Image (cartoon, rainbow over all chains, first blue to last red; front, top):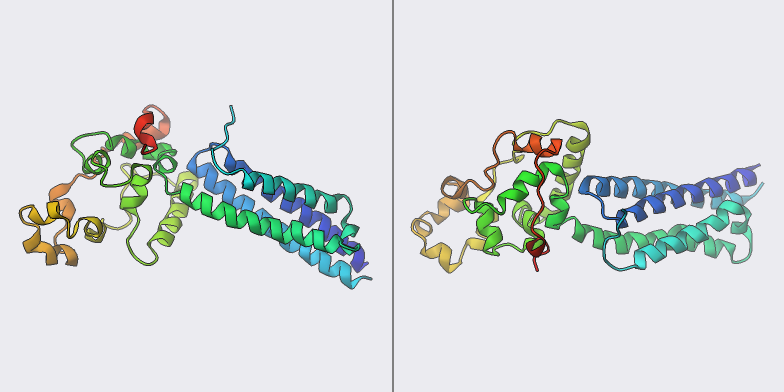
Length: 65
Length: 216
């Protein structure tokens, strides 16, 4: 059971991480300062959340059921 | 038309690599338990985001100091326009190249203290909050009166400063802030009431001339 939850966490974490990285990538576009800072904050937050979730999932998966 | 900012492509390439690596674990999260899978996961979840943070932070912090960055918000257009008005102190600094044109706003509006740069970033977040959720003051006022320290940082000791009448004999008053530089040398921007609202409404547009916007 713990293993399954761990893998779900890895999957969700990876998805959130991807979303965050793509939002941060959008700052490479020529956009205004307000959008730029917003993208950095939102993208950075999502990326950090994704990393935590994915690593937490990895740890749970390693422990196994 | 979407346009990319010029610069190193390493962050774009690293992001795409990171996305592709992370996608492997979206499709099959059990890969983290396979031989070598954990290593790839650590690369995708730690190394690539870490690289992006390092490369991105340096580049984006530099970008946030640029004049073009500050003037990309409509609220700032009247202040940008003042750089081109000959009777403004801002113009004297801009036209005389007393400040680097590519970082004109940042040069004058960042405190020359240990944490001045950090405070400028925090104030930037405050600006963002007001931009989205608050009411923009018109004209925009500084949070605190402009400190002589910022003027003296560059001007103190300069021949032109010391030779000007009334400077040297009141240097202590300037340092102490009991007599302000702005009293004699203002207005710095001289933005009139209503100009910010007009800029926000889009009825007054402003863009620095291409020949000087980049400080080239």
